Image 1 (cartoon, one colour):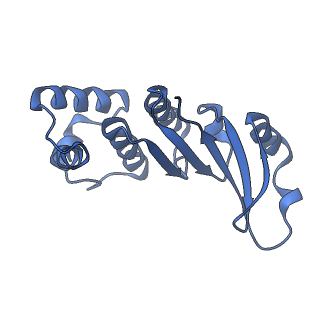
Image 2: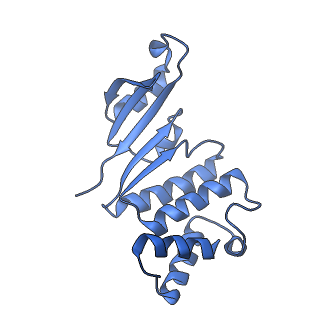
Length: 164
């Protein structure tokens, strides 16, 4: 996995990261995300559980430092502990102030740990309601029944604006 990560980082930056610094950064990020150090020697996602794959996705987010991240159902299949660890990683990456985030979810539980700036409710590909974090709280209390006009399921898109 470390070869993949370094190769990808080199492609993004146009030059290879200094090996000593890169190794230290990868180890630190893996520790913060509670990724077993042995995973560094495996191929990407080889033998990883669903939760471990999500942690590795957030590891990439932290190491590659994108300007914008689309996180699609990042909370899917995570237990409470893994959800907290993954959320902390997203929050660390976002805290740099240089990354915008679009977090797509069907459930509001991840929003207990990642506070959105904006919340949008989509039904059948259309925005049917927009608001702030309070909209997510209302959805948790009231559910999506009021949006059920057809076969489409409602999806929450929580956006966190990049800091200027």
